[in-house]
Each structure stands twice: as C-alpha cells, then as structure tokens.
Length: 68
Image 1 (tube, rainbow, N blue to C red):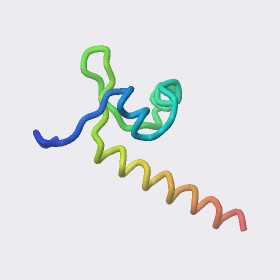
Image 2 (image 1 turned 60 degrees about the vertical axis):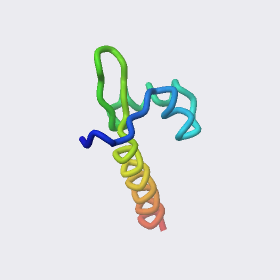
Image 3 (image 1 turned 135 degrees about the vertical axis):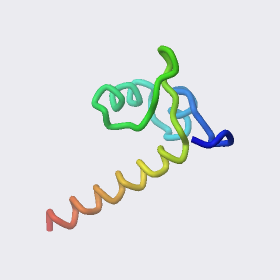
C-alpha cells in the first residue's frame, strides 16, 4: 500500500458508504468487505472499498441479467 493511500476507520467508512456501523461489522464477519486489522481496530483502504463497490454493482447487474 502506498504511503499516501487513504485509510478509513469503521466510523469513517460508515459515513463514506452511508450505512450503519453494525452493517460494516456484519459484512466483515461474513468476509464480504475488504479490510485489515491494526491491533483490534479495523481499517479500510479507500481504493479497495471503491473497487469492492464497483464489483458489488457489477454482480447485482449480472444477477438481474441472469434473472431475465
């Protein structure tokens, strides 16, 4: 990871994605959200989160296409 890469906390990611903190923890528990731990605290690379968001949208679109 680059030294200038933006890293978010759970609270910051919650605001960034506009979801409740419990949603973040639920996705982490299921292994569905890219993140890493520093000690007992989770951190998230913004670039990895943006890539994950794009993949989530592509997956949803593919599911819609397959349903029709």
